[in-house]
Image (cartoon, rainbow, N blue to C red; front, side):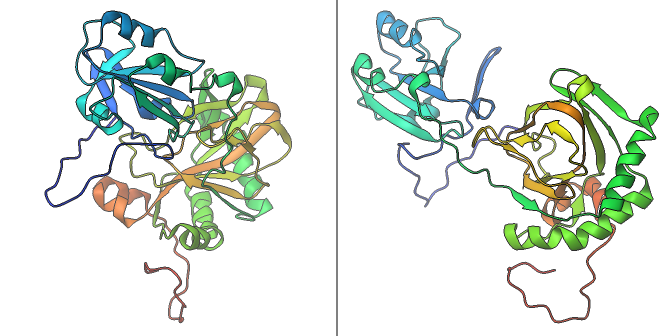
Length: 343
Protein backbone atom coordinates (compact mmCIF):
# COMPACT_ATOMS: atom_id res chain seq x y z
CA UNK A 1 0.00 0.00 0.00
CA UNK A 2 1.17 3.51 -0.81
CA UNK A 3 -0.57 6.44 0.87
CA UNK A 4 -0.16 10.06 -0.12
CA UNK A 5 -1.53 13.41 1.03
CA UNK A 6 -2.02 16.20 -1.52
CA UNK A 7 -0.99 19.58 -0.06
CA UNK A 8 -2.96 22.70 -0.90
CA UNK A 9 -1.32 25.07 -3.39
CA UNK A 10 -1.63 28.82 -3.30
CA UNK A 11 -3.37 30.38 -6.28
CA UNK A 12 -5.54 27.37 -7.08
CA UNK A 13 -9.27 26.99 -6.59
CA UNK A 14 -10.57 23.77 -5.12
CA UNK A 15 -13.86 22.05 -5.85
CA UNK A 16 -17.03 22.40 -3.83
CA UNK A 17 -18.70 19.76 -1.66
CA UNK A 18 -19.54 16.42 -3.24
CA UNK A 19 -23.02 15.91 -4.68
CA UNK A 20 -24.88 13.35 -6.79
CA UNK A 21 -22.81 12.32 -9.83
CA UNK A 22 -19.46 12.95 -8.14
CA UNK A 23 -16.89 10.26 -7.33
CA UNK A 24 -15.87 9.58 -3.74
CA UNK A 25 -12.06 9.75 -3.39
CA UNK A 26 -10.16 6.70 -2.20
CA UNK A 27 -9.70 8.17 1.27
CA UNK A 28 -8.01 6.14 3.99
CA UNK A 29 -8.71 6.63 7.70
CA UNK A 30 -6.67 4.76 10.30
CA UNK A 31 -7.53 4.64 14.00
CA UNK A 32 -5.20 2.24 15.80
CA UNK A 33 -5.88 -1.19 14.35
CA UNK A 34 -9.12 -0.03 12.71
CA UNK A 35 -9.09 1.31 9.17
CA UNK A 36 -11.51 2.53 6.54
CA UNK A 37 -9.97 2.04 3.09
CA UNK A 38 -12.50 3.26 0.53
CA UNK A 39 -10.79 1.82 -2.55
CA UNK A 40 -11.28 -1.65 -1.04
CA UNK A 41 -15.02 -0.93 -0.76
CA UNK A 42 -15.36 -0.39 -4.53
CA UNK A 43 -17.54 -2.95 -6.36
CA UNK A 44 -20.03 -2.80 -3.47
CA UNK A 45 -22.77 -0.27 -2.73
CA UNK A 46 -21.72 1.86 0.24
CA UNK A 47 -23.73 4.09 2.57
CA UNK A 48 -21.72 6.92 4.14
CA UNK A 49 -23.32 8.55 7.18
CA UNK A 50 -21.74 11.79 8.42
CA UNK A 51 -22.47 13.05 11.92
CA UNK A 52 -21.64 16.16 13.90
CA UNK A 53 -19.28 15.11 16.68
CA UNK A 54 -21.32 17.14 19.19
CA UNK A 55 -24.42 14.97 18.80
CA UNK A 56 -25.83 13.21 21.83
CA UNK A 57 -25.08 9.56 22.44
CA UNK A 58 -28.71 8.72 21.60
CA UNK A 59 -28.49 10.52 18.23
CA UNK A 60 -25.23 8.77 17.37
CA UNK A 61 -26.60 5.37 18.35
CA UNK A 62 -29.49 5.91 15.91
CA UNK A 63 -27.05 6.21 13.00
CA UNK A 64 -25.29 2.99 14.01
CA UNK A 65 -28.50 0.94 13.86
CA UNK A 66 -29.01 1.68 10.15
CA UNK A 67 -27.67 -0.20 7.13
CA UNK A 68 -30.60 -0.74 4.72
CA UNK A 69 -28.59 -3.62 3.26
CA UNK A 70 -25.47 -1.60 2.35
CA UNK A 71 -21.93 -1.54 3.63
CA UNK A 72 -22.34 1.35 6.08
CA UNK A 73 -19.69 3.68 7.51
CA UNK A 74 -20.21 6.48 10.06
CA UNK A 75 -17.79 9.42 9.88
CA UNK A 76 -17.49 12.49 12.09
CA UNK A 77 -15.28 15.57 11.95
CA UNK A 78 -13.58 14.74 15.26
CA UNK A 79 -13.70 12.00 17.92
CA UNK A 80 -17.07 11.28 19.51
CA UNK A 81 -17.88 10.11 23.01
CA UNK A 82 -19.50 6.89 21.77
CA UNK A 83 -17.12 3.98 21.29
CA UNK A 84 -17.93 1.86 18.22
CA UNK A 85 -15.79 0.14 15.58
CA UNK A 86 -17.98 1.55 12.80
CA UNK A 87 -17.26 5.20 13.66
CA UNK A 88 -14.29 7.01 12.12
CA UNK A 89 -13.28 10.65 12.20
CA UNK A 90 -11.38 12.84 9.76
CA UNK A 91 -11.96 16.60 9.40
CA UNK A 92 -10.79 16.72 5.76
CA UNK A 93 -13.10 13.92 4.61
CA UNK A 94 -15.96 15.43 6.60
CA UNK A 95 -15.50 18.88 5.05
CA UNK A 96 -15.62 17.46 1.51
CA UNK A 97 -19.15 16.13 2.11
CA UNK A 98 -20.76 18.27 4.79
CA UNK A 99 -21.87 21.91 5.08
CA UNK A 100 -21.04 23.46 8.48
CA UNK A 101 -24.69 23.98 9.48
CA UNK A 102 -25.88 20.35 9.05
CA UNK A 103 -25.89 17.73 11.79
CA UNK A 104 -26.28 14.72 9.50
CA UNK A 105 -25.37 13.70 5.98
CA UNK A 106 -26.38 10.52 4.17
CA UNK A 107 -24.60 9.60 0.94
CA UNK A 108 -25.16 6.46 -1.15
CA UNK A 109 -22.44 5.28 -3.57
CA UNK A 110 -22.78 2.89 -6.47
CA UNK A 111 -20.26 0.09 -7.01
CA UNK A 112 -17.83 2.50 -8.67
CA UNK A 113 -18.02 4.88 -5.68
CA UNK A 114 -20.08 7.39 -7.66
CA UNK A 115 -22.71 9.18 -5.58
CA UNK A 116 -26.27 8.29 -6.54
CA UNK A 117 -28.02 9.83 -3.52
CA UNK A 118 -26.94 12.68 -1.26
CA UNK A 119 -28.92 14.48 1.43
CA UNK A 120 -27.95 16.60 4.43
CA UNK A 121 -29.98 18.12 7.22
CA UNK A 122 -30.82 18.01 10.93
CA UNK A 123 -33.31 15.13 11.02
CA UNK A 124 -31.63 11.78 10.54
CA UNK A 125 -34.96 9.95 10.28
CA UNK A 126 -36.04 12.14 7.35
CA UNK A 127 -32.71 11.74 5.58
CA UNK A 128 -32.43 7.97 5.89
CA UNK A 129 -36.00 7.60 4.65
CA UNK A 130 -34.80 8.94 1.29
CA UNK A 131 -32.37 6.03 0.86
CA UNK A 132 -33.99 2.99 -0.81
CA UNK A 133 -33.20 -0.47 0.61
CA UNK A 134 -30.57 -2.28 -1.41
CA UNK A 135 -33.12 -4.97 -2.28
CA UNK A 136 -35.10 -2.40 -4.29
CA UNK A 137 -32.15 -0.56 -5.84
CA UNK A 138 -31.89 -0.71 -9.62
CA UNK A 139 -28.36 -1.92 -10.35
CA UNK A 140 -26.38 0.09 -12.87
CA UNK A 141 -24.55 -1.83 -15.56
CA UNK A 142 -21.95 0.49 -17.08
CA UNK A 143 -19.53 -0.85 -19.73
CA UNK A 144 -16.05 -1.31 -18.28
CA UNK A 145 -13.29 0.66 -20.08
CA UNK A 146 -11.58 -2.25 -21.79
CA UNK A 147 -10.34 -3.10 -25.25
CA UNK A 148 -10.74 -6.44 -27.03
CA UNK A 149 -8.29 -6.97 -29.88
CA UNK A 150 -9.09 -9.95 -32.18
CA UNK A 151 -6.63 -12.28 -33.91
CA UNK A 152 -3.63 -11.31 -31.82
CA UNK A 153 -1.77 -14.61 -32.25
CA UNK A 154 -1.98 -17.59 -34.57
CA UNK A 155 -3.51 -20.95 -33.74
CA UNK A 156 -0.07 -22.57 -34.05
CA UNK A 157 1.54 -20.24 -31.53
CA UNK A 158 -1.39 -20.67 -29.12
CA UNK A 159 -1.08 -24.46 -29.28
CA UNK A 160 2.68 -24.28 -28.65
CA UNK A 161 2.14 -22.12 -25.57
CA UNK A 162 -0.47 -24.52 -24.20
CA UNK A 163 1.80 -27.50 -24.89
CA UNK A 164 4.71 -25.83 -23.11
CA UNK A 165 2.70 -25.50 -19.90
CA UNK A 166 1.22 -29.00 -20.16
CA UNK A 167 4.62 -30.58 -20.79
CA UNK A 168 6.37 -28.73 -17.96
CA UNK A 169 3.98 -29.10 -15.04
CA UNK A 170 6.90 -29.88 -12.74
CA UNK A 171 8.27 -26.37 -13.39
CA UNK A 172 4.94 -24.55 -13.07
CA UNK A 173 3.87 -22.49 -10.09
CA UNK A 174 0.66 -23.89 -8.61
CA UNK A 175 -1.89 -21.90 -6.60
CA UNK A 176 -4.67 -23.99 -5.10
CA UNK A 177 -6.58 -21.74 -2.71
CA UNK A 178 -10.21 -20.65 -2.83
CA UNK A 179 -9.16 -17.09 -3.80
CA UNK A 180 -6.63 -18.05 -6.47
CA UNK A 181 -6.54 -21.43 -8.13
CA UNK A 182 -4.41 -21.74 -11.24
CA UNK A 183 -1.09 -22.97 -12.63
CA UNK A 184 1.33 -20.74 -14.54
CA UNK A 185 4.76 -20.88 -16.11
CA UNK A 186 7.07 -18.39 -17.82
CA UNK A 187 7.70 -19.33 -21.46
CA UNK A 188 11.27 -19.86 -22.74
CA UNK A 189 13.11 -17.17 -24.66
CA UNK A 190 12.14 -18.45 -28.11
CA UNK A 191 8.41 -18.28 -27.31
CA UNK A 192 8.89 -14.92 -25.59
CA UNK A 193 10.51 -13.54 -28.75
CA UNK A 194 7.71 -14.92 -30.90
CA UNK A 195 5.13 -13.26 -28.67
CA UNK A 196 6.98 -9.93 -28.74
CA UNK A 197 7.30 -10.11 -32.51
CA UNK A 198 3.63 -10.86 -33.06
CA UNK A 199 2.18 -8.49 -30.46
CA UNK A 200 4.31 -5.60 -31.72
CA UNK A 201 2.32 -5.86 -34.96
CA UNK A 202 -1.05 -7.28 -33.96
CA UNK A 203 -1.83 -5.62 -30.62
CA UNK A 204 0.36 -2.63 -29.71
CA UNK A 205 -0.77 -0.46 -32.65
CA UNK A 206 -4.39 -0.75 -31.50
CA UNK A 207 -3.47 0.12 -27.91
CA UNK A 208 -1.60 3.16 -29.19
CA UNK A 209 -4.60 4.32 -31.23
CA UNK A 210 -7.24 3.73 -28.56
CA UNK A 211 -5.36 4.66 -25.39
CA UNK A 212 -2.70 7.10 -26.71
CA UNK A 213 -0.07 4.84 -25.13
CA UNK A 214 3.16 3.88 -26.82
CA UNK A 215 3.80 0.64 -24.96
CA UNK A 216 7.51 -0.11 -24.68
CA UNK A 217 7.65 -2.63 -21.81
CA UNK A 218 5.84 -5.69 -20.59
CA UNK A 219 6.37 -7.89 -17.57
CA UNK A 220 7.51 -11.46 -18.18
CA UNK A 221 4.71 -13.42 -19.82
CA UNK A 222 2.84 -16.04 -17.79
CA UNK A 223 1.15 -18.96 -19.54
CA UNK A 224 -1.73 -19.83 -17.20
CA UNK A 225 -4.23 -22.65 -16.84
CA UNK A 226 -7.51 -22.44 -14.91
CA UNK A 227 -8.64 -26.04 -14.45
CA UNK A 228 -12.24 -26.95 -13.57
CA UNK A 229 -10.98 -30.04 -11.74
CA UNK A 230 -9.50 -27.82 -9.03
CA UNK A 231 -12.00 -24.95 -9.20
CA UNK A 232 -9.84 -22.64 -11.33
CA UNK A 233 -10.54 -19.03 -10.34
CA UNK A 234 -8.96 -15.72 -9.29
CA UNK A 235 -10.72 -13.45 -6.81
CA UNK A 236 -11.37 -9.71 -6.98
CA UNK A 237 -8.14 -7.67 -7.15
CA UNK A 238 -6.35 -4.69 -8.66
CA UNK A 239 -3.05 -5.23 -10.46
CA UNK A 240 -1.58 -1.83 -9.58
CA UNK A 241 -1.48 -2.02 -5.79
CA UNK A 242 1.95 -0.81 -4.56
CA UNK A 243 4.69 -1.73 -5.46
CA UNK A 244 3.17 -2.47 -8.90
CA UNK A 245 2.03 1.05 -9.82
CA UNK A 246 3.90 0.80 -13.15
CA UNK A 247 1.33 -1.64 -14.53
CA UNK A 248 -0.55 0.74 -16.82
CA UNK A 249 -2.52 -2.01 -18.58
CA UNK A 250 -3.23 -5.67 -17.95
CA UNK A 251 -3.34 -8.13 -20.83
CA UNK A 252 -5.24 -11.41 -20.99
CA UNK A 253 -4.53 -13.32 -24.19
CA UNK A 254 -7.07 -16.10 -24.82
CA UNK A 255 -5.49 -19.34 -26.07
CA UNK A 256 -8.49 -21.71 -26.30
CA UNK A 257 -12.28 -21.88 -26.14
CA UNK A 258 -13.00 -25.55 -25.39
CA UNK A 259 -14.12 -24.93 -21.80
CA UNK A 260 -17.21 -23.73 -19.97
CA UNK A 261 -17.52 -20.96 -17.40
CA UNK A 262 -14.61 -18.72 -16.56
CA UNK A 263 -14.23 -15.29 -18.10
CA UNK A 264 -13.31 -11.93 -16.58
CA UNK A 265 -15.68 -9.67 -14.64
CA UNK A 266 -15.26 -6.01 -13.65
CA UNK A 267 -17.48 -5.62 -10.56
CA UNK A 268 -17.05 -1.85 -10.21
CA UNK A 269 -18.97 -1.44 -13.47
CA UNK A 270 -21.31 -4.36 -14.06
CA UNK A 271 -22.02 -8.03 -13.47
CA UNK A 272 -21.28 -9.08 -17.05
CA UNK A 273 -18.72 -11.82 -17.56
CA UNK A 274 -16.48 -10.93 -20.49
CA UNK A 275 -15.83 -13.79 -22.89
CA UNK A 276 -13.48 -12.95 -25.76
CA UNK A 277 -12.85 -15.21 -28.79
CA UNK A 278 -9.78 -17.41 -28.74
CA UNK A 279 -6.56 -15.81 -30.01
CA UNK A 280 -7.84 -12.36 -28.97
CA UNK A 281 -6.54 -10.11 -26.20
CA UNK A 282 -8.46 -8.29 -23.47
CA UNK A 283 -6.66 -5.07 -22.52
CA UNK A 284 -7.73 -2.94 -19.55
CA UNK A 285 -6.22 -0.51 -17.03
CA UNK A 286 -4.51 -2.47 -14.27
CA UNK A 287 -6.17 -0.23 -11.67
CA UNK A 288 -9.62 -1.74 -12.31
CA UNK A 289 -11.00 -4.30 -9.92
CA UNK A 290 -11.42 -7.56 -11.82
CA UNK A 291 -11.81 -11.24 -11.15
CA UNK A 292 -11.69 -14.51 -13.07
CA UNK A 293 -14.88 -16.50 -12.59
CA UNK A 294 -14.63 -20.18 -11.74
CA UNK A 295 -14.25 -22.62 -14.62
CA UNK A 296 -17.23 -24.95 -14.95
CA UNK A 297 -15.81 -27.55 -17.32
CA UNK A 298 -12.46 -28.12 -19.01
CA UNK A 299 -9.37 -25.93 -18.86
CA UNK A 300 -9.01 -22.24 -19.72
CA UNK A 301 -5.56 -21.30 -21.06
CA UNK A 302 -4.39 -17.68 -21.24
CA UNK A 303 -1.23 -15.63 -21.41
CA UNK A 304 -1.16 -12.71 -18.99
CA UNK A 305 1.20 -9.78 -18.72
CA UNK A 306 1.28 -6.12 -17.70
CA UNK A 307 2.08 -3.37 -20.18
CA UNK A 308 3.61 0.04 -19.62
CA UNK A 309 5.47 2.88 -21.32
CA UNK A 310 8.75 4.73 -20.96
CA UNK A 311 7.29 7.05 -18.32
CA UNK A 312 6.74 4.19 -15.88
CA UNK A 313 10.04 2.51 -16.75
CA UNK A 314 11.98 5.68 -15.95
CA UNK A 315 10.55 5.77 -12.44
CA UNK A 316 12.12 2.42 -11.54
CA UNK A 317 15.45 1.59 -13.20
CA UNK A 318 15.05 -2.15 -12.55
CA UNK A 319 12.05 -2.20 -14.90
CA UNK A 320 14.34 -1.93 -17.91
CA UNK A 321 14.56 -5.74 -17.90
CA UNK A 322 10.94 -5.77 -19.08
CA UNK A 323 11.50 -3.90 -22.35
CA UNK A 324 9.83 -5.41 -25.42
CA UNK A 325 12.52 -7.32 -27.30
CA UNK A 326 10.98 -6.60 -30.71
CA UNK A 327 9.63 -3.32 -32.12
CA UNK A 328 7.34 -2.92 -35.09
CA UNK A 329 9.36 -2.26 -38.23
CA UNK A 330 8.05 1.00 -39.71
CA UNK A 331 11.52 2.46 -40.13
CA UNK A 332 12.25 4.83 -43.05
CA UNK A 333 8.60 5.11 -44.12
CA UNK A 334 6.37 8.14 -43.87
CA UNK A 335 3.75 7.60 -41.19
CA UNK A 336 0.63 9.75 -40.86
CA UNK A 337 0.48 10.39 -37.14
CA UNK A 338 -2.98 10.47 -35.57
CA UNK A 339 -1.87 10.52 -31.93
CA UNK A 340 0.41 13.09 -30.25
CA UNK A 341 3.19 10.85 -29.00
CA UNK A 342 5.92 9.48 -31.25
CA UNK A 343 6.54 5.92 -32.46
